[in-house]
Length: 133
Image 1 (cartoon, one colour):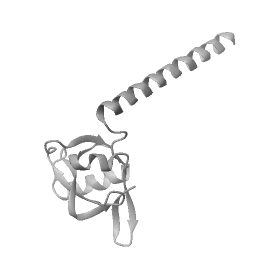
Image 2 (cartoon, helix red, strand yellow; image 1 turned 90 degrees about the vertical axis):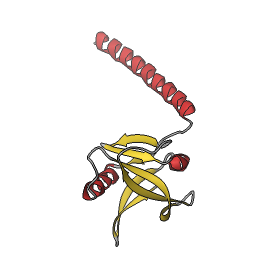
Image 3 (cartoon, rainbow, N blue to C red; image 1 turned 60 degrees about the horizontal axis):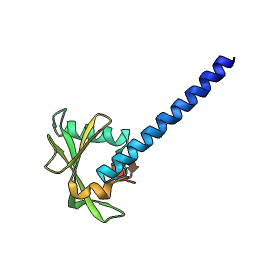
Image 4 (cartoon, one colour; image 1 turned 45 degrees about the vertical axis):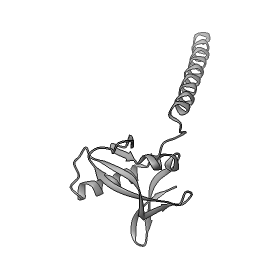
């Protein structure tokens, strides 16, 4: 029993050290990158975007580019209009990430506005819609 208690105490201390190291590393990365959290894409949003990409004949390794667009969805807090496009590669200066097997390219002028946002879907009378929250 004493061995188990000793092991659990050691394990708890080791995990605490590991978690603290991860936090410090994440904090350092936030400072170096200049943002807190990149855009998060839900599984449902990724599935919808993948389906749209396939329906449009996009290559399996193509990505979705999120770009400023005067005629598209408005991002509430910033008033910026957002559009989506299928692209094989990111444009110069785009931020690139991958979530749920989907490559995502974010136009450089949108990086700050989308920082910490979640791209999700909602059901509406008009059908399924992508929304930022």
